Amino acid sequence: MFGKRFKLCTCCRLNVYVDASCLAVAVLMGGWLATSVVPFNFPSLGEQACWLIGLGGMAGWLASLLLHDLAHLLAARRMQAPTQAITLFAFGGVPEAGGEAPNPKSEFQLAIVGPIASVLLAGAFGGLAAFGQATSWPLSLIALLSCLAGMNAVLAAFNLLPAFPLDGGRALRAALWKWKRDLPQATRTSAFNGSGLGLALSVVGLPLLLVGGLLPALACVVTGLSLHRAAWTAYHQFLGHQSMRGTAVRQYMRNIAVAVPISATVRELVDDYIDRYDCKQLPVADGGKFAGTIHLHQALRIPNDDWEKYSVRELLQPAGRHQKVSPGAGVIETLSAMLANGVKCLPVVEGENLVGVLMRRDLLDHLYSKGTATGARPATVG
Ligand SMILES: [Zn+2]
Image (cartoon, rainbow, N blue to C red):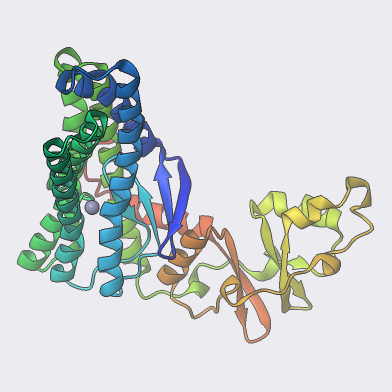
């Protein structure tokens, strides 16, 4: 819904990002627990305890999402599916630019492990709450465990909705894929479901305002709109991936004119290159040969008045193995790596020669334009 995301952590060598919608739902969830759910179910608890449980529930919601998605990622690793980063949305995680599962069976298995993990977590928290009740644990701890059990059950149930890119939508896509042998059609139908269900959910939030209060109504609207947007985005990513399948980096790279000459001064670097290319790290060429990279933060450490005195040669950094790419490399794998490592531009090197620069923005623009060029939107979008 919001499109802003923040890096949460690196887990099992994967970058984990949190979308703004996920944080919004976590805050709304915590507030709802503290003001409605806990006081109603545990009336003997004081206001302070209710808010502490709300905070715990908020953190628990994020942790539950993370564990749900770790189950997906571990399954993807086992199947050697190319997943390198994940973004947590309001309702779960979406693997980023990781390509497609090789067959319907793998797609189904990858989808279903997340809800299974959430059901197991719900059972574990529910079992602990029951054990705590039987052995007289503090009531606030029992309340928190009960909330965590309920949230994981809701997470499992919600993710099983047949709405792509939710797990249920991916399972539906796998079934349609196996039945019709047509992955694009299966994806389109599942994404249509996802977009429609997202809109329906956001509309349901309005009557919920009268029955359940402001916070669950807002959570419903945010989640619904987030699902609607995610369906649309995932469908376009799929179309983009299809169009880029089997293509190589050389088809998308910019020509060598983007590279900074090794003799350029720092002032020329800042004025003529960095601002123009929206890139904090640029490749440097020495007579057509790749010399290394230059970072904006290194240049900006030099006082403004001395920018003419220093040249790029003095600030040059040799490029590591992952900081360049060959023109024949697969573009989908390269984009996945760029997204996973936060790289905006990558030198394209053939032998010792710098032959071009690959800009992440160009690839994402291509993904989006290919997706919209078909006119096959999954639903009406504002
Ligand atoms: Zn999932």
